[in-house]
Length: 167
Length: 365
Image (cartoon, rainbow over all chains, first blue to last red; front, side):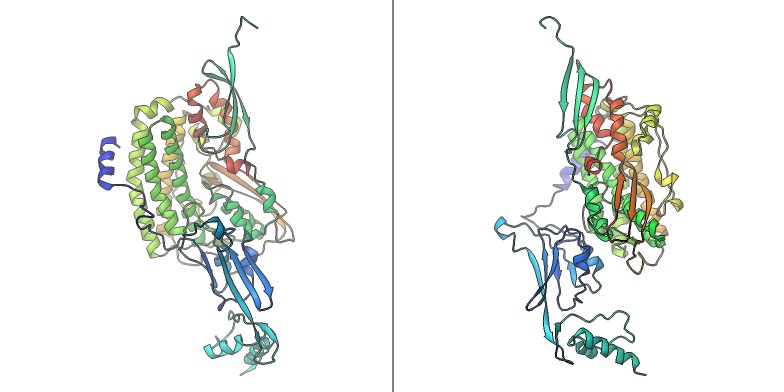
C-alpha cells in the first residue's frame, strides 16, 4: 500500500463518514432499534418479560387489563424479546433516533394494553388476549379466531375441546 | 542522602489510556529509560458479572455474557451456550454450526484489524491507523447488515443461532469479503515492509517459546512465539473440524510477529466464512423448542480473537445457573507482559501492552 496512492484514492472518494444530521444515514434492514408492541396479537404469555436481561419489560395488572411497558432507557436492544415472542407482537424496528432531552426520559416508553373484556360465552371478565393458535388442527378459520378471542380462557378451552370432538 | 541519587525511578503507567482506553495500572521501575521491574495492578473495572449470571436465567445470560466485552462479544455467549448444550446433551443443527462459525470469524476479522490499527496509532503512523480502521469498517458493515448491530451480534441462542442468512445478506457478505481481501493483503504488505512499523516492532517485547509455555499464553500471543495452539484445531467445536483451518505460527515472539499473526488470521477467517457459505446446508438454524437445561456441570472452550476462552457452568433445578466461571485469554496473556516488558524501553511500553490485545473488561468482568 502506497501512501500517495491511498491519498489519491481518498481524495477521489471524499469523506467516508456519514453526513448525518445534514444528510441521510443509511440504516441496515436488520438493524435492532426501537421496540414496538402490538397488543392485538399478544397472547399475554409474558415470555418477553421473563427473557429480558435488562428488566426493561414489565407487565402489570391494572383495572383496565394487563398493561405492557418497555422502557427504552433500560433496554439493551438485544432482541431477546422479539426472538422468544411466539406471535411477533414485540418487534424491533430500524429506528435508532432515540437521543432525547433529559426531561423526556420517562416518555421513551413503549406502552400497550391487553384490555379486559366480557366473555361472549359465560359473561366473566377476562383479558382480550390473542388466542394461542399453535398446535390447533385443523387451523382456525378467521371467524373462529374472532369468536375464540371474545371468550375467557375457560370457555376457549371448552370451545377447542368441543371442536376436537367434532367428527 | 546528598551524594548518591538513586538510579531507579518508579513511574506509574495507567490506569487510563495505556493502549486501549481501558484501565490497567502498571508500576514500573526504570533504570534510565529501561524497564527493570513491572507490577501489574488489576481490578479497576470489576463489575460483578460472574455474580450477576447467577441472578439471571439461562436465556437472559446469553445476552448478559455477550455484554462482558464488546470485541469478543460473540465468543462469550457462544461458549456459554456450548457449555449449556453439553449439560443438556444437545447437538446443534449443521446449519447452525456453520452459522456460528460465520459469526465468530466475522468478529475475528474486525477484532484483529482493530488491534493492528491501534498498533499503527501507537507507532505514530496515524495515516495507516485510520486506513486500517476504515478497512475494518467493511467488517463493521457486515455485522450491522447481517446481524443488526455493529458490536453485539446477538447471533447465539442455546441450541443454535438466532440469525439466518438469506440471499440478500449472503450476497452482501460475499461482496464485502471480496472487498476486504485485497485491502488486508495490502495492509500485510505494508506491515511487512514499512520502516516505521518495523523499526518500532521488530525485536520489541520478545516472548520466547519457553517463556510462552511457562506463562501458558494463548491465542495469537502464543502462536507468535512458536506455540501452535489453537482451540479450533486441537479441540474443534461448531463446524471447525470440517473446515479448512490454517493455524499460523511464527517463532520470533516479538510485537511484529503478533501483529502478523493477527493479520494472517483475519485472512484465514475470510477463507473460513467463504467455506461455510459454500457448504451451508438447508435446514433449521436452532432446535424447535427452547431447551430446558437439566442439573449438571460442564466446561466448554472456544478460540476467541484473543485466544482460548473457557467457560465453566454449573446448573441445578433452578432456571438460574448455580455458578458460571470463565477464564479469558487476556488473563493468561497479561502475566507474560512481565517478560515482554523486561529490558524494554519506556517508549515501547504502550506498544508492548497493546501487542497482547488486552481486553480488560473481559478479564475483570
